[in-house]
Structure formats: C-alpha cells, structure tokens
Length: 62
Image 1 (cartoon, rainbow, N blue to C red):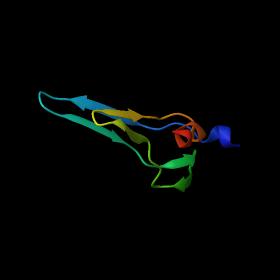
Image 2 (cartoon, helix red, strand yellow):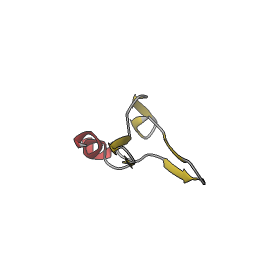
Image 3 (cartoon, helix red, strand yellow):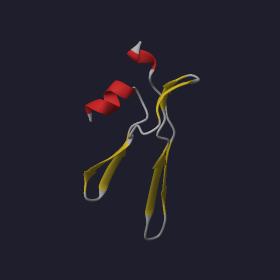
Image 4 (cartoon, helix red, strand yellow):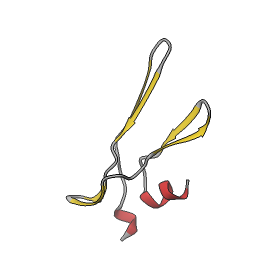
C-alpha cells in the first residue's frame, strides 16, 4: 500500500550567518528500499526551503 511509504529524518540548524538543512534520501518500507535518491527538501523561494518527511505521495505532490 502507498500509505506505508512514509517517514524520514530532516534536521535544520542555524548559525550567526548561515543555515544548514539535511535529510536522508531513502524511500522504502521497513527493510525494503525502493529508492536512494528521493528528494525531501525543496526550495520555495530564494530564502525559503521546505522539508517534507511525511507520506511519499504528499512529498511528490510538491
């Protein structure tokens, strides 16, 4: 079921003059890996990024 393709790890950190955003790129169900290049961080504007760690179909909608 597509409803089981969810979950991820995303972390963001801010410094004095910088920002770092990182995520895993794995898409899978439990121990089964479907892809290792699934994008989860997206630029929305020049200074705005969004990280989506939920349901894979929702991430693909963005």
